Length: 451
Image (tube, rainbow, N blue to C red):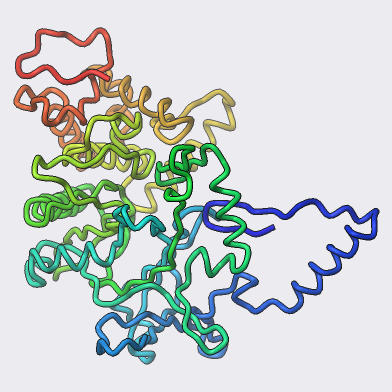
């Protein structure tokens, strides 16, 4: 069995009750003994130094002289701050690192290691986060990015490793080796194979739609800290405001729409005695056209995806889908707590209630469970009107004056997004209420499209 980021590939059955099956099994065991570390799944470019107790991470140097040679820069990290929680998908990992091994305990750099898609079809536009970030920096300028709180890519590229004296790009084809050709043929003969990128291999054009993943590593600055390190909702409001201000400037200046606003993609940077927001992770960002609309494609993090996004509607995405995501971030943290201590206490309370009542459903539980359509319906019900929003969401916010401010922010966002008569058909993609049959039809302004 071979495991890739998207598929589990198995060989034909080996029947050890006959000689042919036993021979195949013995051959497999012998071959396994001769596998290299890379073939066994180890990453030779990230090595743990047991004596010094830090990771040595080799990063491709995209700033090196353009002489055709691939150079690497070594960074040093004491700890991995983002772990790949799932076997499949992008398998994103993150390290707080330093270029100077003597400063490993005072890191100033974030190393992002991930496996994004790279299409094998030359006519498809592949998403490359490094190129996107370089383009944004070109349009905005480095000083503006620092001022606005937008993470900058200092270095990075596709990870390479040495094989028989040659440098090889680390991607799906290298991972599968000689099996890749057979896998490609088998995949092309499958009528429909969905992927996590919402693309599929179809009978009409099977071969051209096969996708690979590439191993990409980036050096990012500044190094932020997670939202759960904030002290209060007041700080959260500042950080979210900074992040969305950056979001708006990026869209205006470079025409890139982020499309994955979530607590994990907004970080905190300390600026003297105040905090600032830092917008990160442009994996799902896409260039919009002249009408400022992005293609309809389901992307994002489940509890924070807009309803149009969840439904995979054909309505093109706009920036208001990302603003809808911010509303869900405010609600999520308002209920679960802003900082880690509050979140732990809340979870302990929920665990106790679930233990006492097996049928108890925590607030917002339906935002992260079930199918995409299930989550969309739950959000529609929760946001249908002021009364529903208060009864289903706001009343479960944490207590205190600071959380009351967060409630006011959530109310304002909901009204601006879903009760705003100024929003016409251009922004129909964010209408949460459009499928609710008892919504009053007399509201002023352009009628939103129904799906």
